[in-house]
Image 1: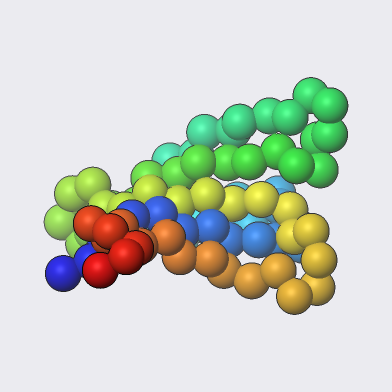
Image 2: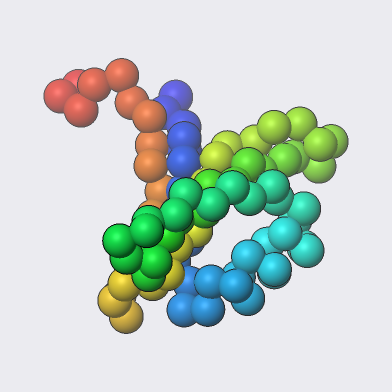
Length: 81
């Protein structure tokens, strides 16, 4: 069965979103900065299940357009099958 491998969350206020997800879910964040364009900085984070086991990875970035919404990436053996 294909599974969600990674997800991305766009935010209008990145600092507020980082504080929220860290505070509510205790996600560990790691910033991947973009020195040429800080508006495109990206934060990777690891999720945990209710037992503290590693969950799927995610990312958070500044919303680039009003229609920019959460994106899920699903792993499949082949896009042709």
